[in-house]
Image 1: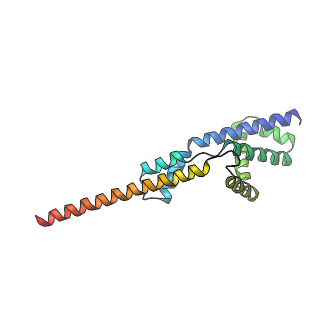
Image 2: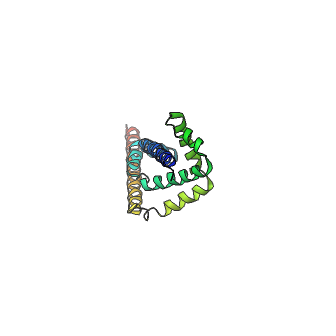
Length: 167
């Protein structure tokens, strides 16, 4: 491979992988927000508890998908365009990130991603089924505690009403 192209490839991998890692920082907050939207009955502590145990995607998947993006980019862009995209400016790094997101949203990549996630244990995600089972069990415990709290509150309310009726 031409040394310049190897340098461009390395730059793109670094920029996109770094952005992926930065996105992981807000992952738990995003999961809590999602849980809040789909399960408004769940309190924020329970949502945080669940969000903590949802594992991040494997780095190997990110590297694979970034590699696929780089290959596609090299097929469609000429060296002069690559030089501009890889100049290290924040604007061009953002352009790379946007192009990568668009690549991930392509019909072809949706299939690849779905297939990769179906076979995640083969890709090094051993124990993912156990993590999912533990997450489901934890969610069930959280739901049980919410139900118990509601029932206790209902009993307390009923007792208050009963004591007011006797006065």
